[in-house]
Length: 170
Image (cartoon, rainbow, N blue to C red; front, side, top):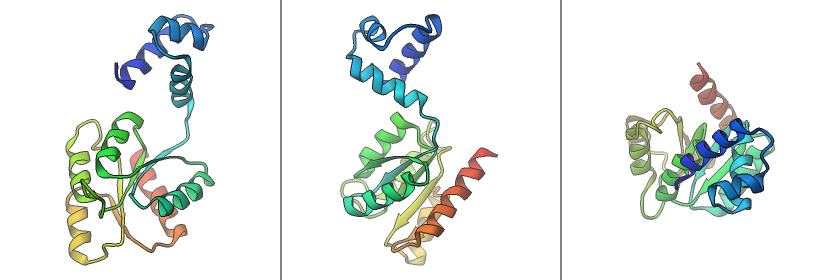
């Protein structure tokens, strides 16, 4: 059973019996109580969610901490494959996508995300050291909503994130 089906079943049970405990929901669905509690926490989190897809753990962690201090719910992925999986399961409000990653690079990940009807609405900001004009044009032509080169100014990146989130809210 995938997380979307689990979430729908949890919501249906909570709707039919608002006083149902996590343990009762877990028993009813035949799942672990901790897993149910995590899904309920996920469903209750109304913060804007940002998915960072970058194999550089130190840079990703620093960025995550800076964005969490702004009130965002931040999740991380280490490559394009994991980024796509997390985009499907977490439904982020914006994706910060590095280009140079092992396995699937950011260009391919961007193309696959924008080709998926369930994910194509999610704004993507390419966040990468590749600053050549051809790289920027390729990223934007593949569907990225913005392109920021590393090293970046954190204040500017936060403004760009707010901008794509505002555009998505319209």
